[in-house]
Image (cartoon, rainbow, N blue to C red; front, side, top):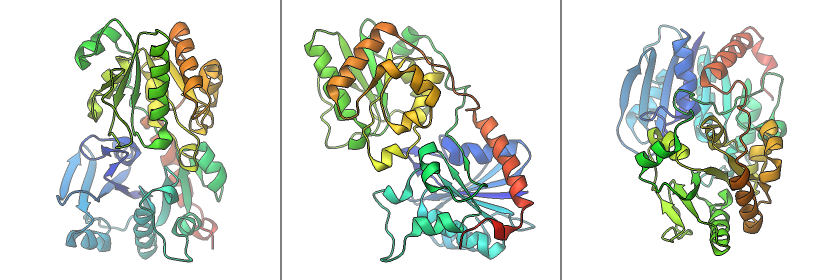
Length: 371
């Protein structure tokens, strides 16, 4: 079995190549470690630098989208020296990467897997020609579809070959750490309640509601500070006395940032994009053994149903700072931890997928794709 994995290099404000981040890096890396012949081709929308490197058994190319080598690699299947064509082409990142992967797979007669880790047609940059829905077209043409979100899978799956592929964890990185030591490392105050949020700050992520909730608590005499990490947006004023803004924290520092907080917040609002998502930070917070306070968002309730039931007393109404403030206060008093989700390591997820891909290759190809 020969796999070409085509993914977006920069996504969710992370660099898959340098930080070895997320499903786009971890799935092919773990396949290669298990001696599955796998190559990773990263499409770079942001820089003009080309990379070719090997990480143990995984060969990686990173190609700027606006370069002659991009088209050369597309013609040759990522630019890798393959004695035989790939059996499987996996696309992960957006619809445009999906389309180029589909056309490549069709040309070399490979199976096409569409990894839908988000609702791609809700991305701000998504454009499709008038009268043509590229997202639906790719869903129909794929031999199998993978979904990071259970809610998204329930609404978009096409065949029994489709499966849930959650965002996994590296438990060597995200593990329990001492709170005081982590605060020293992150240069944070020791003797005050710290509520942390780390990630995107677009309006639907509810960071403005979280700031308002912290302000309400401080007005009630609660000694609390909000620790924020991530890429700021113009709509938010982070220069406030109740906020400790750490900037866009490098991924290798995230475990200490999470462990430095008393509580970790997931304040998502309801929206088609957020409801269909599957946030990495929920499982990371649980793995670091920190209490979680969250809103009743399908991002949590659909993807982590057991944990959501355990958190029920601490779940706030989305877009309601008063409700969120009450949940934070209650969880700060009780400090309830939830169970670790099962089978959430990248190793176990990749192993399960490799078995599904072997099974897919044994099926007649015409059974998979929709017309």
